[in-house]
Image 1 (cartoon, rainbow, N blue to C red):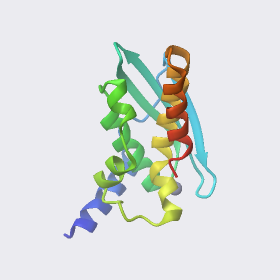
Image 2 (tube, protein in one colour):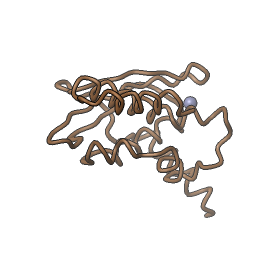
Image 3 (cartoon, rainbow, N blue to C red):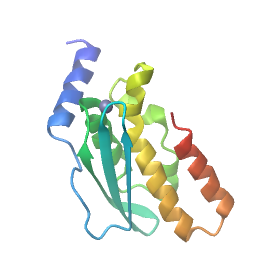
Image 4 (tube, rainbow, N blue to C red):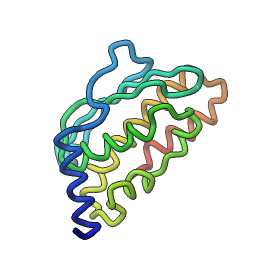
Amino acid sequence: MSNADIYHEMIIDYSRNPINYGKIEDHDVTFHDSNPLCGDSIDIDMKFNDNKVSDIKFHGKGCAICMACSSVLTEIVKGKEIDEVRNISKNDILSELGLEHLQAVRIKCALLSLKVLKSALYSYLGKHLKDSQDVDTLKEEAANLY
Ligand SMILES: [Zn+2]
């Protein structure tokens, strides 16, 4: 099998059996966004403990790429410190699934979960951070992701 085949298999697998799929009833923050072009629509719930993401789950519906990237993203984020999570880039997600050269139309499918994650962090930190400039930077990152 070529690399492309392996990545394709991974995406199909994740979309059939998504990781971290579900809700966190007592979440500290939740955020929803959608990608109307494709019909992807997801929510991310997060819980924090000592500046770390102690739990993260997502739910909603989406195409195979959206579900696979949401699985990969939540797996990367779980247990990480907030500062590390803030530094997660598009390529960290895309490269996990060999999607670096995805066409522009599908990029939104792949990055919707990262956008929701950054928006959720922004919403959480906006309530807890004293440094408002820091919060503005995060808001801008979420808005300019794609
Ligand atoms: Zn999609």
